[in-house]
Length: 423
Image (cartoon, rainbow, N blue to C red; front, side, top):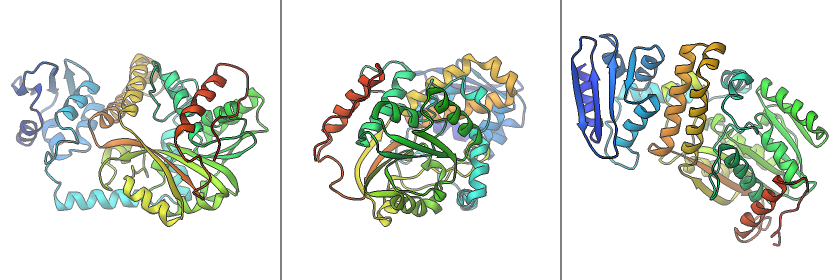
């Protein structure tokens, strides 16, 4: 208990956290404060305190998954939010750096995990995305957007925010009917279907998830657009071009830093001379780092959240011109909180289809993910690239105009061409 006690004295200053031990002893940390909760952490066996303290990246998660702790006054989302609000990324000098051995092991494990050769990439994708449509249908929107939504002015629901995200990206791509678009990491096909619908473009989506590909192909067939919207179980490194536009949403996080140069060079070579692309990815607000142990072990093996510095450096080496960079700050936090609520409402179904430990793991993942965008070191990058500086309009006004035009299409059966495309 000594190590955990020392850590909590340092980490809890606003609001209170009462820790109850198995023998009934209790100790309170922090100070009551308006706007801050009073939570309780009950340790259900005598070894769990030292386990959490000795394994800072995995201990709390696994203790929660194994039902060795209880949260009072809230749930796991409230608890992690409480800890992160007490220790926001913006507050410097807060955390003690890990020891040399721990830091070296984490770094080497993360780097090795990111190699992502073709066979490893398929296994890593399947680990998360082939969990079964029965899970994702419980919390995603009808367009199956498993990425950060865009909470534009007037947007109130997750469904509206995801459509706004797709319109925002479509606008930045400066699409025109008949263009050929490559969707790298197409998921269940929602983005490809939407781009075809609102802009009249031909889209080819690729992913390494067999379940996603099957769903996407069936969707295109049902809508009668299988001739214009196609999907392939293909590694992006094996795609042949050229394409007028490339879009990649929520896939760059799976590339791995050792493959950044390959990714951008491949995209450069796949683009037509007057081509442009947009990547939408989770990003670090600080310098390059390593993937935490919980995420590597349970959620996204092979995944790595890039820093803006290393992302742009790699694209520069591929001779791609960064033409627009937008940072979405708390948008993903709002998105994931909606997913969390929907999973919570479907507790019984998730436990029936998987088990209670899986449910607890999944909720810990969503809780940690939501709060890291609210007070931690994560944001979302939308980076627009072009091969030539004269390909896209000179000002950003066209983006707003095109978004309005695409939104109008979304509420009708008409096809429109984005306005404001003068060079």
